Image (cartoon, rainbow, N blue to C red; front, side, top):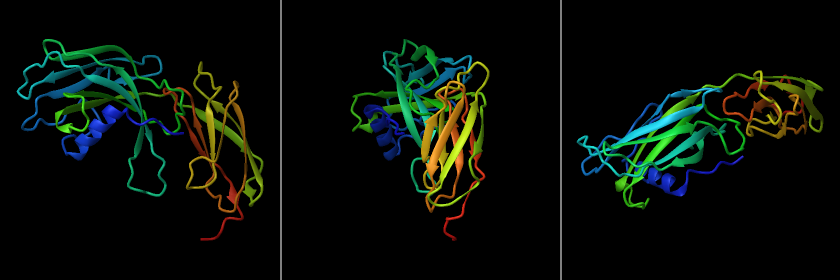
Length: 270
């Protein structure tokens, strides 16, 4: 379940700005980097509203481009993106990026005579059809202006972002297993049903079964139109972390997780 990286121009520019120490990526509210000597512009971005929900997913994105002294900078094209973030599965505690990203281009509005830019009618949503396992409810809106369009010259790139909270409805999962004590070679079968909020179709909800702590998923399936599912897996000698996870297809419906009462009698003693 790989995700596309940030598009080359935006990702490279942001990464180079970070390496150069010129950019600090904020995690909440409208932010921009502190102007430094030699900066030509200051960029900000925000949304109205700052929270969305199942029934109201649309926001207006606004921002400003100014000179460091606050003078408006008109005629500046600002590249806007929505970035849906996911938690990286990392049971080993490695020093890696705790997120991975799925970006979507929103448009390139141009600042007006007052240095302001606006992009109305932006849907805060997940539109790619990829899995929503590990999705986070804090969706980023990013803004970028690169004077010469060359990511290899980060000193002329200006970046800001803000987050929109996508309030999701809860869901649940019920299940039964064919056995609670297993050994290597046994077939474990999990049958169950996902229950989503009233009016939301459970069909297509992804269901994942974990058996080993190093891998978040071993086998997966999708729920039928009535929400029912069946998963089967052959037990190995090292299986010892049994969890069931669900990932609805809608960003505004939370997945759920259940620890299964399974004991593997073949698990080596530690």
